Length: 214
Image 1: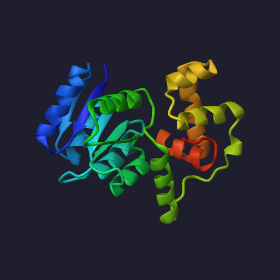
Image 2: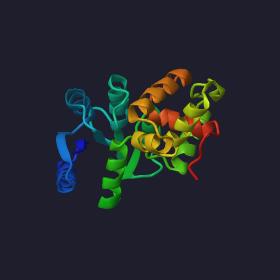
Image 3: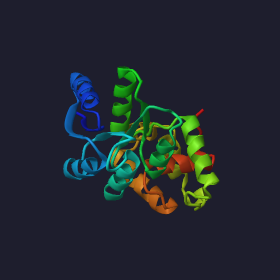
Image 4: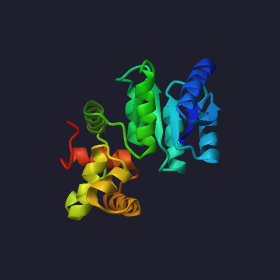
């Protein structure tokens, strides 16, 4: 059962999401009305997936996401936004959010996104990945610049599959290795490339030409 934390300042919207998710066999373990509550709930409950609204009082979703990921780099956050090109989405993805879902998306899209992220995937489409990379460049920010030549062939393949959206389980099946081995190799890849999370790893792989999303 996937354990979900809902973060949105509109009670009716949260109630609608709760009904939908519970009807799909998921468990809503908490609801937060602002970013500060979200940080506290996430630290206390360690949900499988956090659905995070962007615009909220007291502390917005981007800053809350940044704080949550500083506490737990493995936290899986999906941003909920009204607009595909929302500037805050870029900042959240750069911080390590697994992607975003539009508020007007249908139920099937949302449920699929939660299940994919719960299994370890990142929701990075080609346009979003490129926009985030452009944003890094425009602000003269850099992802770590260690050469991927430092990775061996197996590590490079794991990084490529990660960037293409495969979960740890799928990577293990494709490479005929255990999920534990995949997790260990990813930890080594992150250390070698000075990366903090799967989203940064996917962006790095796309930038370096290891993988593409087309």
